[in-house]
Image (tube, rainbow, N blue to C red; front, side, top):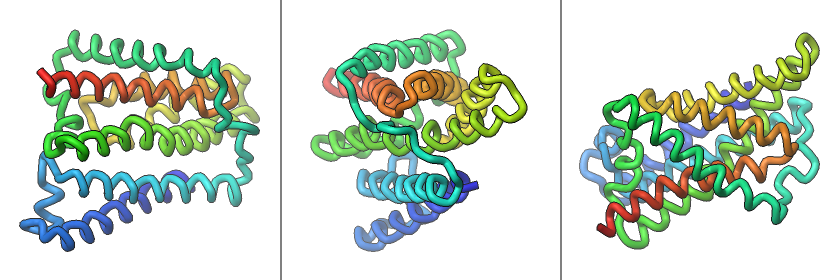
Length: 230
């Protein structure tokens, strides 16, 4: 419930910040035109992400303080060995790309175009940094640090440890995929979510899943960057 409330609050905050930005920038058509845009300006994307992340952060704090879910000890402590998860994220991105190449879905690149088509130079780098480094922090904190654990640890009263981990991994991955509201990308996002949940369970930390998630996003960003260069 904390995660759902935080997600909805984040959507509201994102809309409010985008409305304020549209008013300050005197965006033609205002918020309604901004919502219909297939390539919103960089400031709208950035404000939307910030609003969403504030909601995520509040949800995590409520879950930890009022929900009785104690954070893992040292869950954000990095280790040199975590660098091994960089190629794992790259491999996951290539695996998803191979799946899309096999199925030939329409509109698979739409989210990337929505994020980056109106950016260039410094704004391209800014939105790229937010999507590669910022988004995985808050998404891992909420989906693996709260949702996965709530589902897996809550199920252990009735199921075996292995079944509880499977339930938590699949359940949190489905919610992770659905939260992106991209039907075409759903299968790939759910698959990635399962991998990230299993990493979090195995390490009892969030850094491995964050590194994997960040390198997954960075691979897509690098591909887009080289497309623009050429």
